[in-house]
Image (cartoon, rainbow, N blue to C red):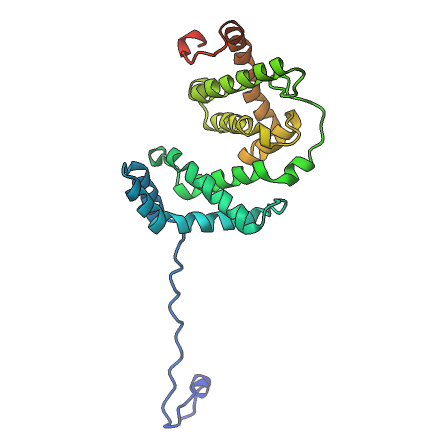
Length: 253
């Protein structure tokens, strides 16, 4: 009986027995560093009322995920223009995540990983010196120009800005119904909160930052800004008369 090609291909052991073909090694389960376990821990952290319980949950179940997330975001998006060393920058991002951990609401359907990835990226965008240096414009924001022409005017504009931030942040869900509009609106407010940290705080630089934060086009940002501008004209009158802006929705809607 003639040996077939298949028979010839079979390798034999020293004892003359066919060698067993090496099977594929089972793939190792790659552990996800920021999965549902971390998300559940964040929910428990926010629900905990005892400080020691919060510290324990954070230290044992959340910190490593935040640390790795910050590292990956920095490396992925190449935020290489920070004055501080990488380790310090990462620590700043982690601290910012902790400061905002209470804002995460799992009932809204967003994954914790996605939510905090956006938070970390937004922080880095705001503090990336490269963004500030590449923006050159003389088109100042007409509504909130912080250049001090006098001490009184400077204080007046600072007070007005703070009042407006509180008002709009409170009423964004009423002013806008679409998720994309709401995201753009909150991004605008976040930038105004950090206006003192942003070089060239003007219309062009804000549009660039908002586009990077929300991934929407300029026309969509303008649409949201126009809603703000329309409301601004209404609430400015109250501020000029009373020195404050009421959050009573019935007065402006």
